[in-house]
Image (tube, rainbow over all chains, first blue to last red; front, side):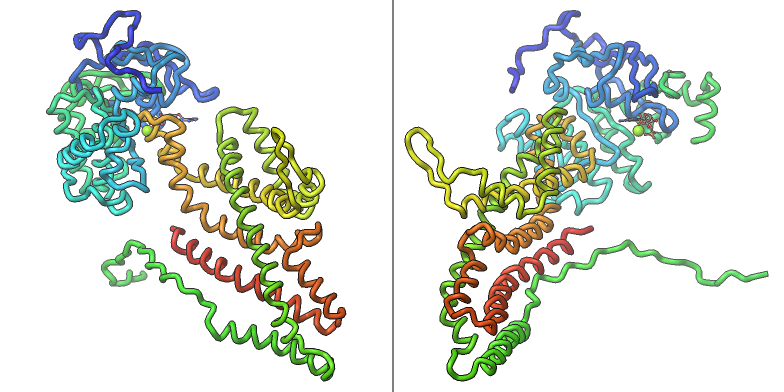
Length: 261
Length: 279
Ligand SMILES: Nc1ncnc2c1ncn2[C@@H]1O[C@H](COP(=O)(O)OP(=O)(O)OP(=O)(O)O)[C@@H](O)[C@H]1O
Ligand SMILES: [Mg+2]
């Protein structure tokens, strides 16, 4: 089952190099039954870039972000992650998912395992890395998200913000090249939102490529390189955060921003 | 004009689940004395009826109790083995029920519903008469005595019920658990065994123990198909004592008492677990 990881996937476009988009979406379509959630989405994310996706509820933001690590299959179009086609029946999901880390709104920690075990599980059992080495790394990651001392706590004993930071550490333990965040602060109270955002900002400062779905407009403005506004399955408008927030061009963007700010 | 009440705040404290009390078997000595007393009373009444020439029910039970209790032990053996076999088969069937293959899933569903909704006694009869009394495998003969057939017969409804428990428990877990595991590249098999099923054990334990109690009590039905378990022995003892009608109630009362003393603690422990695990 395990793939030798040194052999890179040969792709039609040749080997991926960091000057090409790390994530490339081309005309992505997705329907649930008769309801078309994504109606032709295209964009690129370069290495080290931070992209924020905003938009009204039900506009397909979560669906979009889930397509990128193949949690949701798409109907048409193309998604490439480091040159590897995600919309491909022969996709090596293990190879894709170790490149793409994901953090969910509801944390989704494994409640029967401690914080440390949550972080260690995937590297040990999926990547079959050396347990001692992984444990050291897990301690370091928990320290990085400011949770030293909580290693042996179960998720049920942690606050929402702490759980979410464990979830971030858990995703980072796979050493991903890109992190996807789906409204990771939406379930938190305002006090704990900050601690999670600080953690994300530190990641960004280290050069991690990030895609965030968020309702934290201030945060998006601060850290994003590009902001995308989606509505009813299409990208209505995008741009650098300063111009996007101060001078939105499309009516729908204006209406959305005036509502939320 | 109505004036608003001047209470400035209503403080809503977060609900804290009270610590569950530690498990204590609430069958105190007094209960045991009461039950023993009731048996003695019936025995005593029988003694009064029978006059002096016949032995009291108490003496009869005392004399035959080693045999009767060995029969009871047999009941327990059958129930434990049936539970073991049924649970293993049930987990396997449960995994089929939550599997991706629609054909096996549908077949498994029919299977489950059939065995869940058949009277246990009917299944027992089927096991008795459809399973041969011996198997020949590569020259060696493996005998299949009646009691093993009874074990198989009882394990069928156990299997179906356990399968349904597994299916229900897996379904009741939030889908986020599957998604998180998937996003961390766990295979489906790893997800099941390392993440999903360990969380299901807690939910399944109380109903599983309930099922065990039911199986234990159902094992007396094996007497109908000729397995020499406690009830069979009880009726044989009754016959050996000349079939005195006054012995009927004490003898069967003794059997009842044995089952009660065995199943009641299980029942209490199940309730305790339910209280502990319920959120
Ligand atoms: N598995 C599914 N099956 C059917 N419909 C779905 C499924 N997942 C999402 N949808 C529908 O697709 C639409 C877009 O959902 P999505 O979760 O992507 O929106 P969103 O932009 O993330 O919204 P929110 O801000 O509320 O999280 C919704 O109308 C939703 O009901
Ligand atoms: Mg969403």
